[in-house]
Structures are given as structure tokens and as C-alpha cells.
Image (cartoon, rainbow, N blue to C red; front, top):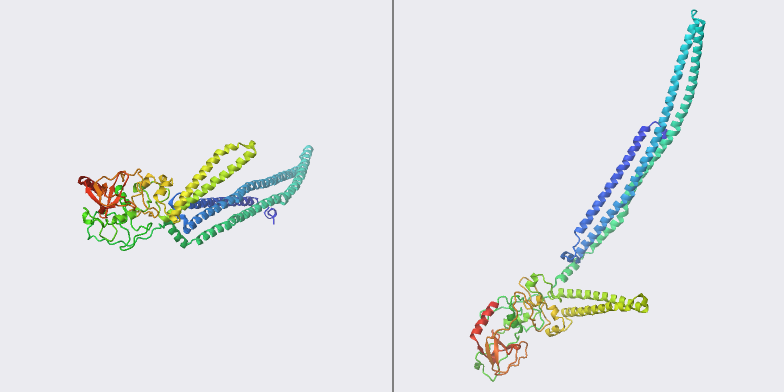
Length: 622
């Protein structure tokens, strides 16, 4: 089966057919090119989609990705990114293996086709030229034969006519012979040309054209084979990425199977657990009995029922304390003794005391005592003003609930330990370098690293002190260390650093706020001393309470409890706060010594004007 023998006369149709084949190949190239563009566009859209839903750094959204469900979603996004990468691989392979190769092949094919059909046209032109020569020789032979016949007829006519001279007859005979000779020459030429044409025609149709058509046939078959191979490559490119795409899908399935709803629930507990106990029952307050002093409506009592034992030091505080109490009044509540005042000595009659004992008649503790217990809790958040200003939290994370504070402290300790390890690695490296310099002085000066080694040593020491500090706070939260008093805390050298103005301004203001803010109670400290630092606008600078009168000690009193002061019988003292119904009077000996004594132990002489001023100031402060 050969086009040269079967299609020897279909030169034009073969030319059209081969051109259609090239058009099909170019159309397929265009198809693959558009497919690669689609793959690139699809990959780009997948990457943008994955990027769109990735968590933003340093945002609250990133914190949500600690749960298994959100981590699975993040894994899905990452796998979709890899999935998009495989579509990019498809596009790249199709471009290099199909589009690029076929584009070059089409150019070569066009050149080859042009060459073959040029040879075919040249052969056709040659055979047509031979045919024209044959036709010209034939016509000339035909013409000469006719001329010879006419010359012969004319000679015969002249020869038969008796009236024609002999010279005319001879002339006619010679002319006939000339024409016959020309006819013979034309015949010979025609015969030669015919033989030559037949030979050329045989070569044309049996040699040249078959060879040219055979080459065209082979070219066309190569084109068909090449487009078939490209189609196989088209499928193979897709098939090569199927295992990787399958792995991506398997990873997505694995991430979905890793979702643990129980673990997520536990993580929610760890994230938001405050460490506080639920509030207890609220005591019934009998308002039928007259109160000795006005109690602010914003004050709350402990959630301890009547008749229960005194709560142990460090127990959980059940109520809330609003942060809107003036400093002087707050300090008086903070330092007020917890115990009821002792009765006067038996040798003296209570009736002899002008103002009599002022101990409360109820079994329940006075509200000021409960308020004092609340205020022994450790301050944990900044004042509201500093919160509005966006101030940073305290260094010991005391603005957080116990459980959250423990996590933050542990995280801080881990970070500091990592920093220490880095500094130690640098120090070790410099030490080795110094040893090398000592052994080989030509390599460097050993003294040049001493300064850096000293800096690293100081940095390591500072970081270790920081670790000890945070480990101490962490141990306090976890209950591993004994209670630290305020005095020990002040002696630690870190008191000033952690009691900034923002903390001090509200360290006495609250345990929790009306809007639901909360802090951890101070179960480790026995008293709270507020250093005189700058406060926000809500609080004025601390000033000594004004003197509202004088008093005379009727009996000797040994002030052994916190907030009390010792007095000797007959001693004259200044009164700075009268009895408010709890049986205690606040007095001052000098600028540095003041405290509470039982009201029944002193005889009070109030200055009326000073008392009025004090009450007015107290009313304003409330």
C-alpha cells in the first residue's frame, strides 16, 4: 500500500490532505495550551482560597487553631495548597512535553511538506515540458507530411500537363523531393521525441512521483504517530500526579479522623478555667435591727452562712468587691482588726467609761471585718482607667485567673530557659574560640572575647534570676511554696518593678468588677501595704487622716494583733476615726504610730468642728 502507486494522479488532493493534518496538529497544540492555562488558573485560585482561610499571625484567630477540629481544617488548607501545586506540575509538564515539542515539530513538518511538494511540482513541470515538446514535434511532422503530399500532387499534375515546360516539371519534382525529405526529418524527430517522452513519463509515474508520494506518506504517518504519542503524554501527565493528589486526599482524611471532640472540650476547659470556686449562699441580712454606721450599697459580704467557723486564712473569697472606694477609707478597712475588741478589765465598771464599750451585739461579724477579709486578696488587675488606656498587664500575670496565670508563668519560665540555653551555647562557643586563640595566638587575640564572655555571663545570671522569680510565682500559684509576707516581697528587690503606678492605682480597688472582671484572691499575704506612688485620677494622693479629737487611755492595752496599737493607762492620744459600731477606735500617737484600740479602753473627747469636717469628707468619699 503506497500512495505513489495508488494515488499517482492525486497530487492536489494529497496536498490538501497533508495541510489538513497540519491544521489538526496545530489545533491540538492550541487545545493543550488552553488546558495548561486552565490548570494554572485553577491552581492559582486554590492557592488564593487556601491563603484566604489561613489564620492571621498574632491574631485571636490563631489561638483557635489549638483545637483538633481547627487543626484538621488547617491541615486541609495546607493539603489544598499542595493539591494546587500538582495542578501547576500538570501545566508545566504539558507545556514542556506537549506544547513545546509539538510546536517545534509543526515547524519542521511544514518545511518537510513544502520540500516534498516542491519536488512533485518540479517533476510535473518537467513531464509537462516533455509533453509540449512531443506535441510540437508531432505537429511539425504532421505539417511536413501534408506539405510533402501537396508538393507530390503538384508535381504529378505538372508532369501530366503537356503544356508545361520541362523546366517547370523539374522544379516541381525537386520541390516534392524537398518536402518528402523534410517530412522524413520531422518523422525522425517526432519518433525520437516520442521515445524520450515515453521514457520520461515512465520515470515520472513509476519512479519520481512514487518516491515523492512515499515521502509525503511517511511524513503524514509520522505526524499521526506523533499526535498519538502526545495524547498518551497528555494522559500520562495527569496520571503521574494522581498518587500525590491521592496522598493529599489521604492526609485530609487522616486530619478529619484525628478530630477528637473530647480533647477539644478539655482544651476549652484549660483555656478558660479560672480556678475560682462557685459562690456560696448569701447570708440573710436583718434590716430590722438598727445599724451603727452607713454601709455603702456597693459593698458585699462574704458568702459564709451564720454560725459557720471563721474562714481559714487563704480561703476562697466568695463575693465581689467594687473598685470605687477611696483610699483612706480603704486603708482603714484593710488595717482594721478582725477580732472583736476585748472587754475592759474586771476591776473597772463599764458604767464608769463615758462612752462605754461599743462591741456589736450581733453574733455575726461586722461588715467591715468581712470587707477587710475581702481586701486581703491579692490585687490582680490594673485599674479601669489603665485598662481603658490599653496598659500592659503586671509582670507576674496577676491580672489573670489562677489557672490561666499558672499557664502564662509556665510559658514564661520555658521561654527564659530557652534563652538561657542560647546564651550558654554562645558562651561555650566563645570559650572554645578563646582556647584556640590561646593555643594558636596567630589566629587571634584571646583577650578580644573576654568582654563578650563577661556580657554573656551577666546575661545568663540575669535570666536565671528572672527564672527564679517566675518559678517562685509559679510555685505560689501551684501551692508549693510557703506564704510570702508583704515584707519578704518587698525585700526581694523586685517589688518596685512589679508594683508600677498602673498596678498601684488599683491594687486596693477591687477583687472583681460589676462587669464580670475577676481576679485571684491573695491567699498568701497576711496584709497589704500600698506604697505611696502616683495614682490615676480616680484616687488622690494618700494623706494622713485629720484629727477629730483626743482621748485618754483608761486601761493599759497591749496591741498584739495586726492593726492595733499598744497604749498605757493615762496616756493622751489623738483620735482620727471614731467607733463605727465594731467596738474599735482609731487613734494616733505621732505621725508614724497609729492603730486601733478597744473603744471601752479609752475616754474620747471629740472636737465638734473637726468631727463635722471629717463627716463631710467621709460623705464625699463615699
